[in-house]
Image: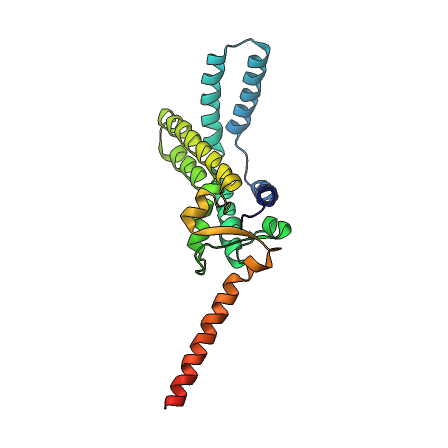
Length: 226
């Protein structure tokens, strides 16, 4: 049964809001460099010049690329905190909350196995690498730390384009696939169900109960034979 798509979207927005708020609080304690402040002021000035027509689009893009590289390099600690926090929230927390985040809990939906096997933390990690931008942000951090500006900008443009396309595909699959599974669900062998659907929700426990009953019958038969 296809999960209600709007519940997944609302749950994700709630989760992003929670993660953003926590990340903002945590990064308040990271000192802001003078270079970062100067570059942000420069960026605002460039935006004003472009809006007023004082510089061309080509000049704007060139200056924007130069400034964004410095800003991203100066704020790499914030990016690392964001990746770590996202991993803890969408992977570790979801695992220990049995397939739910706070957003999913509010919207009464749950991530479960698509093949009736118990989900491991690796399943949650695989799906989160794509849908929660963990992989894209990790690539950005690694490249900003170890590549020169020109190489970094090329990789950044490429990854932005690739992951942008991936997100469109995921969103379309959630909306239009009969089972509502996105690319991240297919890779992680997961699906999202509504907790209001008792039939779907109880399928796995019933299967496990049947297996236990079968084991007990076999055990009793062995005792009788002895």
